[in-house]
Length: 151
Image (cartoon, rainbow, N blue to C red; front, side, top):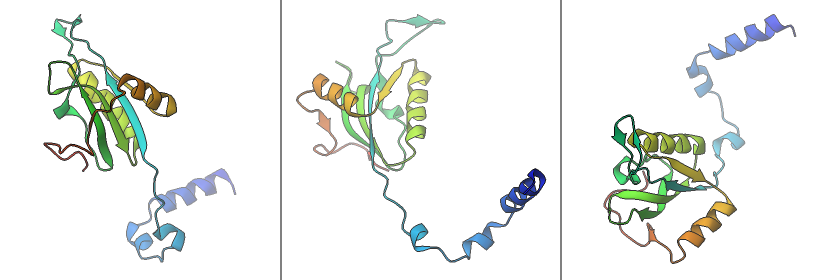
């Protein structure tokens, strides 16, 4: 197949109406979507309140109201800045899908208020979390939130 034929075939496929594809019988493999294993994100927000940049100060954490919630995301544990009941210093988040989008949204939310999000996943970050917060925290499974933590 020449390059020109391949490009024509791709263009034909890309411009085909969706209605044709919807009426085709689905295979049994396609009808049962695979269950995505949840990924835990360990997020720490830097205290930038002592910094001054372009005439504005940083912030001690991320305001909880700016946490970017999405479908398949659940806040498992929260840590607040000492003396501030609405500023998160750390959060443990479970994501079912769109892992990359959640990371990008967290970084963007943190930067929008003048702080920095440090995000990690995996065994070493789980161990670091357990060492920093050995007595558990305000677990979402144990406490009733004021707002839905899973959408």
